[in-house]
Image 1 (cartoon, rainbow, N blue to C red):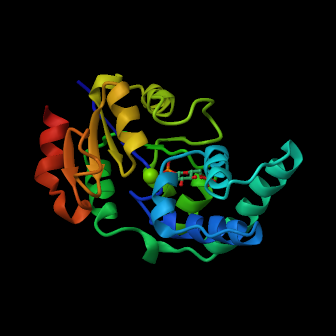
Image 2 (tube, rainbow, N blue to C red):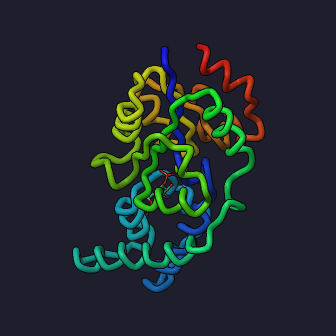
Length: 217
Ligand code: B16
Ligand code: MG
């Protein structure tokens, strides 16, 4: 059966969580409260809108619809400034090794990200050409843990959901991959991502032999 591989972006291909953190922290500080790195963990894989809702809960702040919309834009304007100078040096270790191996085997590759900034980031770091399909926050109506993003990616690749492998760093993302009946691979802390079918700290621990086994299964 033809296999497809789906990559999350933030935390899997690049560490943009640090830039999201700086932009959310700036907004929190402007609104008069603190926002810690630990709290930023809650934002991984979560849509921008949901992140702002959580931020306001943390700061115990009410917002009118107009304020909410303004802060969403403000955070993204700041985030775009932080990612403006991203380049290939920000690709996480051995991600390119796995992408190149899949490409050599003619295995279709998709991006499945909650971010609305996914495509420009892939362009900046020079990885866009690896991807046969890009499904991101601009294409879906339901956020992870809903499987919509990954099911749409599988559809665009022309691969059955059950024949897809998903690399994810967020609990919501692993849940979404499992809900889509895909093979979930957790990238990061195994204790946090315990629901994943396979776990690795990062791509340096993933051998091409292991990828080949997934392709041949
Ligand atoms: P944006 P992923 C997610 O990307 C991030 O993990 C999450 O922290 C962020 O809020 C979300 O994208 C939306 O990003 O504001 O750029 O649309 O991990 O699903 O690739
Ligand atoms: Mg992620």
